[in-house]
Image (cartoon, rainbow, N blue to C red; front, side, top):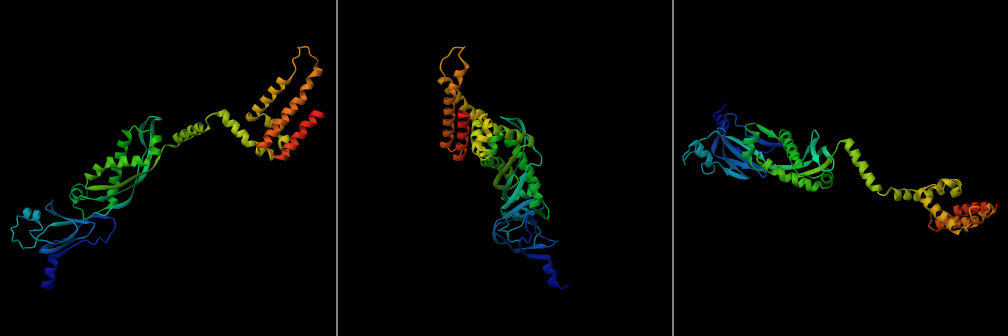
Length: 344
């Protein structure tokens, strides 16, 4: 090996990080026993920051730009190394690069159901899922609290710790919010904002800035979800009497399509709740039109009310026809049945 190769191996003139691998948050520049040449060039690209660490102590921090490393640009390191202003010798120092790009689409979720108090259901166990994004904002805090002296530190390595922070913050937020579960499910956007506000200082203490946080799903155990579905169904039904009338009214056009039409379904249709009211009205008409007689009145006079009852029945059928609840053919058929019973 020649003298030139030896010198090149020992001294570094250019320091930079090209981020050849995705998902790396912190990367230590490989020194391999070499020294940094005084006056060397340091390039920090956009969405990067660089930190010099001298014997375990944070020294100078650099944002995006190109720098010439001298005692003027390395004031903290100069102080720690006790350099004078004319220092021009190579020096040793650890150099770490940090990625400050926004880490998008990070998923979070509760591995186990969380038990909280609820105004409507008492104690409930719920699970939640969503997405969040963040970026590295303070490399000194991140280096001190998270990455340390590792050669590199990745997004995946940080993921588990962040998920734990999210779940802890979620438990605290939901436990102290006094917001019923039904309101949580209906106001996920407000819950997301509340969660983000609560977690901002938690992320900040590690040198991270929470960019966005979203609650996408809140779910209950299956048995409680079924109970809620039943409660919702009962609320939708409301007045059971009116609901039954509605069902009967809807069934008339379908029944009319059966073989025999309305004449075929006969008493079965009349037994419905909706038709029950119609029959009641018919009976009132018959009673009102009957002549006042003594208890010993001759039975022969009873058929006198038959024409009026038949007339009421025909009126009811005509009403159904006018409302479009039966067809003309059904009306004609039922009318013929009434007349047949009347005149024999």
